Length: 399
Image (cartoon, rainbow, N blue to C red; front, side, top):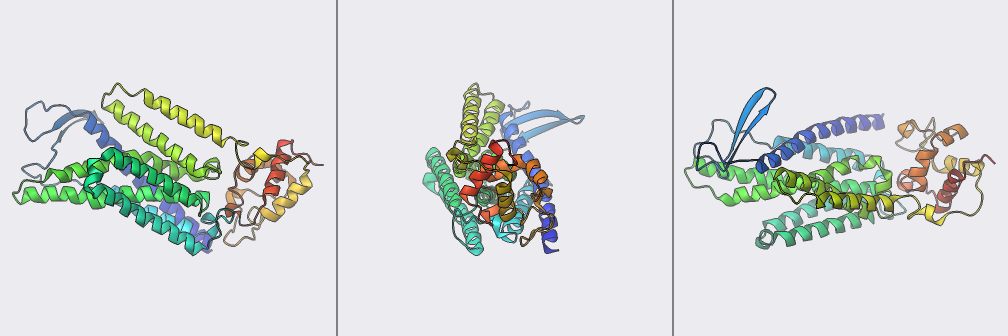
């Protein structure tokens, strides 16, 4: 009963997270597009930095951008902040429900590191807290804002270090989700701690009859641009659990960084295109090259058990014994593994017909990657993985 309730709670949180995330991402993309399409105002106005006319849904809209704050404040000023807030809240709750309250197998892989669930939770939480403090401290410093390319390079290297470090202590899936959570936390706190308070200072100064400090607006724009480039990498992490050839790869941290670079480059291409830049075509070339490299590395046999192969013949009876010992605790009509009440994805691996039916999934998650059994909770050995791979590759002989 408890497992079912957690599953429903996770479903509701995930759905809500996606809904508010779409609203946040949509507004982020829109305003980046808007900034790159602003024109000189049709009627000269010293306050207006740029203006744009648009048509949508049968109506015409005129947008004026005032960089600091209008001299006469409007009666109502809409703040784009709640989308970020609720994306952050639902994301943290989802992380807690699925990974911290859920099965330890989501967090821990004994083949990676021999740690307890509480140690894994501590590592995850510490990553989020320390990661934000380091990032924010760097960009609040004088040198971090003066040498933006250097601070950007340091930030990227830091992300690589975090991805590699987490992949050495947590399961591949948990490492991915915590890197994504760190980026998500940075994005949310950028909005709530730096962007919104800075804009409040501009508004409050104008209301008090004082000249607003433009540095608040500059900092808000900087953090907004950071969020824009981090968006697509975070979206990938949200769907990565469906693709074990990424988080289950021996070089999963490198695959993650490669896909993050792809996501940032895709966003950069859109930003260049929206600004009318002619230097946009090298970006797709770089994207395609990185995709091809990541795809090649992830091909079964490049690394991992399949590369070593197995010389002897393997028949179904051996594979069935492996499935019974290592997989049937979860993938059976009546699972016996603690916390599992129904077979995941309704995949049962008890009969020959069932094992043959799901051979492709077995190949992908058990042989090509080490993502199943989940967290290797049943301690499937390297020899057993090789045997299963050999049986499938040789045409799944009965005898």
